[in-house]
Every structure is written in structure tokens, then in C-alpha cells.
Image (cartoon, rainbow over all chains, first blue to last red; front, side, top):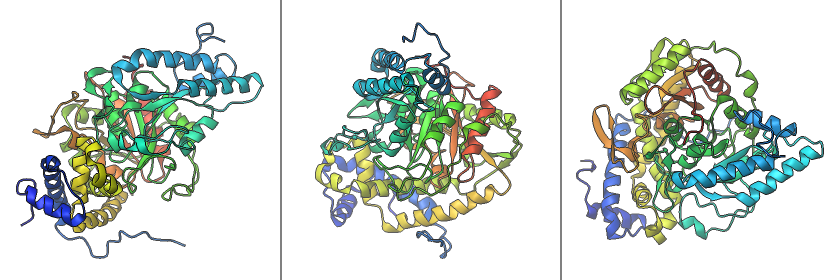
Amino acid sequence: MRPGEDDLTRDDVTRLANMAGLKIDPAHLPGVVRNLGLLLDQAALFMDPPLDPLVEPAPVYRP
Amino acid sequence: MMLLDHPVDLSGVAAIARAVREGRLSARALVESRLARIEEINPRLNAFTEILGNRARREADAVDALVAAGRDPGPLAGVPFGVKDNYDVAGRVTTAGSIINRDLPAAAIDAVLLQRLTRAGAVLVGTQNMDEYAYGFTTENAHYGATHNPLDTARSAGGSSGGSAASVAAGLCDFALGTDTNGSIRVPASFCGIFGLKPTYGRLPRTGTFPFVHEIDHLGPFARSVADLALVYDMVQGFDAGDAACAEEAVRPTRHGLDAPWVGEAAILDGWFADMADAQGRAAVSAVAQALGATGRISLAQAHKARAAAFVTTSASGGNLHFASLEARAGDFDPATRDRLLAGCLLPANAVLQAQRFRTMFREQVLDAFRHHDLLIAPATPCTAPLLGQATIDVAGQAVPTRANVGLLTQPLSFVGLPVVAVPVRNGALPIGVQLIAPPWREDLVLQAAAQLERVGVAQAGDGVC
């Protein structure tokens, strides 16, 4: 199940931060947890259904 | 030549510049009058981060010297203006609303848009307050304080270009430059009751400005009339190779077409844009639509997803930009900025890439809407200016966090880089902005429509009240 604002924990965020190479001050964790949850809730709005596989986000050069 | 000895029409940028060019008004006297007004009023607004009196006097004297020598100082001769504190000003550090940037070297040269304005004779009077790193909609900055709305100093001026909008609304300067990533020109224009232009992505070079989200950052002007907005915009148009995203698009002057009556096809943006607006915003849109002869309504079915994708892209891209500082000195960020940027660094790649691909798809959907319409109309903000420190605003019957939601009507449009003018409609105790949206590169259309609205009295900026 996708973690959202309500079920993301400080431990989750600390683990993610470690993987990303970031050390987050424990005093900052509540705000980061809240904001990451909000971001994941927003992301859920455009993650489903899947996009057309041919949608092209790359820079396209036109001669 | 003293300002008060030679009364002139000071009701617009062109009129001021004409008076200076014709020798009826001294640029130095004009600048002194604006500096005096800043000194008197800025302590109540906190709109400026630095007042550049010496530079302004030097530039004004140079304009006067040109006039005395019989040479033309340019279409903006002597006109005082300000810039958001993320534009480089030679000899000063570009803080971008942060204290972290204070460790950067001072800018060697002005930002390109600043160079162009100075060449046109305009006089820079100072730098203006903003949300830290342009990440916010209220200009409540933990380091430099909040900017107060000149219409009601208990309220927000909007953000992130709040200092620029408040300065123009209060008559502290005659126009200003801001930046707009998710609505940072259109939101403060709405709250302060002035005009703001966010041109097409890639139209104006960002060379010499501090970035926020490269793939969505835009520059643009604020002014108290459409004629002023168009004149300033015309002076800063043009390609510059220093910005990799700047298009080699031909300069398209706009100011000469403003008097033509609007005859295009306009439609109201329905759905998300109506549902998320309050009654005053919807009434403002109706008044604008009626004045432009717009009868149709169209809906962008995925606007709410575009807003969400802009939200995610902003955090991820901003987090990436500031990763090193977040790692080394997170405690020096404004807490409101820091926590969002840190969260952006932790987003799954899948979500970030999906947001990018979604943007491509949404852009095609929006461009399709312009096959039958020249202009789309939408409210700029979900409400009028909230109180400073107000935690929530009411949107569609729900209390939602203010900072995260003030830009929910602007975000889907900047996400796909369309040109938009925010026009002020005064249909309540406080003004509210309406967005006029055109296809890419058609800034002339949004400005022409805005001019029509101003002529018939539907859109009107304040008179520098404070």
C-alpha cells in the first residue's frame, strides 16, 4: 500500500534520507514527514491510470 | 529642474518617460520623490530588501545628462523601478530571500533584463522581498520578515514576488520585475490589485537570476496599467544565449496593438478553475467574460492532476537544486522552505518521471483547447488576500493550508508555460485577479484583451493607496 500523509513514519523518512545521502536533524523530521506525505498524496492523483507509453518527456531537436 | 515646479502627468510609465525626455521633468527629482516615498512607506510594508539610493541617483543623473546633451535616453527615461531579490544587481549578493546565499560572491553584472531596462533609461531603486528561494505564495520570510499588503497591511501581499507587487501597488516605484514558477507573479498581482504578466516559457531570458525550478521558471513585469505592462515587456523581449531555455523567437512588440478592440474568441475555463474559486472570483470571471464577449465554457479535465504534477515537480526540482545546502546547513533555511525541499529530495523517481510525462500529455490537451479559442479566462486565486499568518483558507467548502493552496489555480497553467496576464477586478472589499490565457507566444493577445477590460472599467489597478 502506498504511504501517504497519514501513514508515513519518521523511521520511513529517516531510511529514505539515508538512502538519498541526507542526514535530517530529528527536529526537522515532523515537517519533512508531513510534507512528503502531502507530496505522495498529490503524486497519487496522476499515477493512475498509467500514461500512454509513447508520451515523450525528452528534449526533441527539430532540424 | 524640480518635480513640484513643473507639474506633469504622472499617471503612467510612458507619460513619465515622455516628460523626462522632453526636459519637463528631471529624472533626479523624480527618483528623489520615489526614494522619499519609499523611506516613508516601506517601513510599514517591508517591500524592499535593499534601497539602492546611490545607484538610482547616479543613473538618474546619467539620464538627465543625456537629455541636456540633446540625446534620447530611451523609452523608459528616468522611470523608477524595482526587482525581486533573485535578480542579479552588479556589486551585490543575490540573496533570493535566503541567508545561505549571503555566502555567494556579489554579482559581477546585472541580470540581462535589468541591463535592457537600464539601456531603455529606467532607473533601479532597489531590490524587493520574496519567499525564500521563491518557494511560497505569501512572502512571509523567516529571515527578512513578511511583506504587508498596501491595501490592508494585516494581509499578505501574495508571493513569492510579494515585495515587487506591493511596491507597485503602493506607488513606491512605477513598475517592477518578478518571477513566476507556480504563480508568483499572478498571485501577488491578484492580492495587491495590479497587473502582472507571465510570458510564455522561454520568451524572456532568465540570465542573471537565481533559479528555483528550471523547467517552470519564468520572469515578468508588474505594473499599474496595461500600457505600462506592455511597454516594459516590449523593452525586455529578445533572445539571450545565457539562458539555455530561451527561445530564438522573434520579438513581437505589443504596445502598439493595445487600442484595437478585442474581437477574438474567448471562453471561460470551467471545472477545476470554477470549483476552486470563491464567489467573488467567479463573479470577476463572469464580468471579464461578458466584457470580452465570451459565451463558451470549456473544461480541462485533468487540471487537478496538472496542479498535482506541478506540485511534485517543484519540490523534486527545488530539492535537487539545493541538495548540497540541505545536506550541509539545513538549519539555515526558512523552516517552511526547508521541510518541503527535504521532502522533495525523498520522492520516488517513479513519481517525478510520471509528473514530467504527464506534463507533456496535459500540454497537448491544453493546446487542443486553443483550436477553437484565442483566449481562456480563469480566476487567479481561490480567494482575496488572506491575513498574514492565516493558517488556512476556505476552498470549495473546506479549510485547506494557505501556503500550499493559494496557487492552485495558477499552477496548472505555468506548468505548461502558457502566457498569462493577471488583471485586477475590484468587485469586493479587496480586489481579485483574473487570468487571461493565450496560446504560446501570443502575449499580444492577453495584453490586448487586458487593455479592453481596462478601457471598459472591468479591470483596474489602484491608485497607489497606502
